[in-house]
Length: 120
Image (cartoon, rainbow, N blue to C red):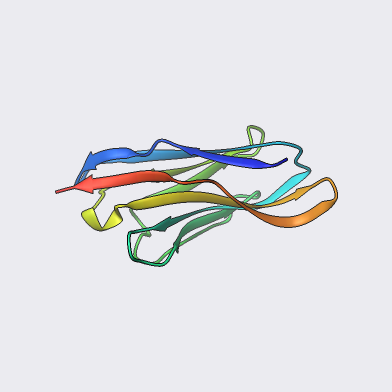
């Protein structure tokens, strides 16, 4: 079975940086796209950034310039580098991917999330 696991969350002060990682495991034929989302308490889950296997990226307008998404297709991992962090960035961050496995095509998978807390 396919599983996604996030890592790298923690506590950081405003203006600091943090890097998150996501690792995909299981029987995977292909990964079409990878992404990061976040959800703050009392708010809806929102898109942070996405990246295709070919390297095309897309960011939420409010985060563009501060966050950078990247990927390693061989390792089946993708990352989120967060700079100039603000208290409003505090949330649970989830990685996700559109994955084709054996007998299943283009299924959406999610990690369980990692907490990022930005203090003032």
